[in-house]
Amino acid sequence: MPKDDIKEIKTNNKEEIKKSNQSLLASYGFSSEGLPVEVRISMKETDFVPQYEVTIPGIAEGTKLILETKLKGELVTEVKLDISDMLDPKKYEEVKTKFLNAAKKILERNFPSLSEDKKSVLAVYLLQKTLGLGEIEALLSDGQLEEVVVNNAKEPVWVYHKKLGWCKTNLRIKREELVSDYASMVARKVGRQINILNPMLDAHLPTGDRVNATLFPISAFGNTITIRKFSRNPWTISRFIKSKTISTDVAALIWLCIQNELSLLVTGGTGSGKTSFLNAMAGVIPANHRIISIEDTRELTLPSFLHWVPMVVREANPEGKGEVTMLDLMVNSLRQRPDRILVGEIRRQREAEVMFEAMHTGHSVYATLHADNAEQTISRLTNPPINVAPEMLDVLSGIVVTFRHRRFNIRRVLEFAEINNKGKPNTIYRWDVKTDKIKGIGKMSKLVDTLSLYSGMTEKEIEDDVNEKMKVLNWMANKGYEDVDQVGRVVSHYYVNPEEVMESVKKNGTLF
Image 1 (cartoon, one colour):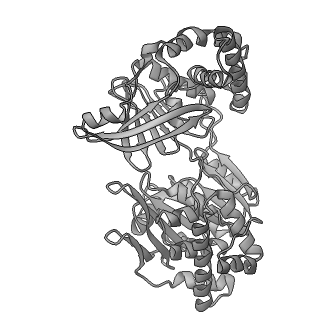
Image 2 (spheres, one colour):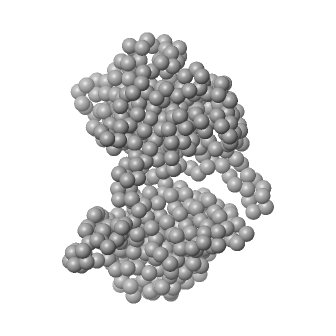
Image 3 (spheres, helix red, strand yellow):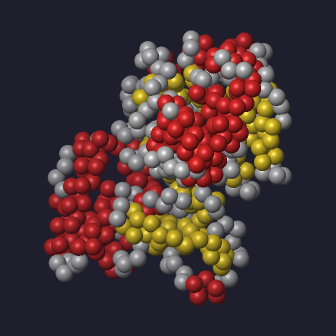
């Protein structure tokens, strides 16, 4: 890759920031597969969005030039691999190890006096330039980012920061052909193509990050790449409580519903956190239940000890053969004796019909759907193109509505509603934007009847159970039990031995 393929703007130091009327918003570092990366985010008075500046300390421009123009070619020549090995996702780690070892040998030949630490850093840089997406690879390792976006070769790479929203970076891919090459590289790894005849791509990287790409003239300003990062630290119910996304009483009620195998829908707008919330709900499913998940792209991460079979759709090959749809997987899942079914997103009528049929035949189903509130969710389900008969909705117990407030850059559970016998929503809780609190606005009726029917609990016992779960959830949040496996183990322990868990809660002790 020629040096001028990536234009890197020099990072300003503190004195330069002060002189140029910039305010420093954040500064931190992280490791990208062993490559040290430093980030500085600042805001100029003349700009409307923050500037995200990324640097790799310790690698001079002259060294980069040698690595990219000379040693990169040596590396490709030295590693003998079949093209099938390079395109096989299952062999990705093996291929990466071979390239990394070869890179170190090449560096030893060319820089014999180089220290081992420096050699390892340069080897990773060379590897990312050869097998990866160049400088973009460093951005994918930043845990503070949700999206990495290339709009074209004329403007900087953009990123979506979890706390600061959209930022312009100091990286720019200068040639449209290179953007296209990166998209083609991703496509080949999943056995697909992106070209003039097929100008759009929806695929995923070996890390699980989702990639969408488009080619000019479909995208009028140039070739694009949009990478939605796969969460390395998936959301759990205790993390949602700690971040004020949901109140403890609503979380406890949802937990009680899931424990008693009641089906729920998670709805909301794009980027509102529907899948993240579905992931958090799945963490309170009992460990002795068999779970089948169905997704377009693998995003869910459940506790490692659960009885879980993740399934993913497959698009047709270039000849139009081999497609496996969401509907195919949903129908197939019913033959696998599932106790719980998780569905990534419902979009079509037949998918919704199969989902409600599964609920009617005794399966607990948890799915996501695009809708902005509980009323709109019912409207979307009962009108074209989904068009489910209203009589089928009575088997759905509740709707959780997630919401992303773009101006405040926060996510909240907007509503929790039960569904009555006529398929109408009864909103029990709603978020109040003025106080930033989730408040009770209605009284449970159908949920009380359903929980009483299946659990034998009276209304008072339901209230007591919710209060007990609230104590467990608050304790987990305060103790920092936020990891997927940690939350899963606490919940599973609670199901088996609630007295022991409640004793730890009462004493504010630890469980493990």
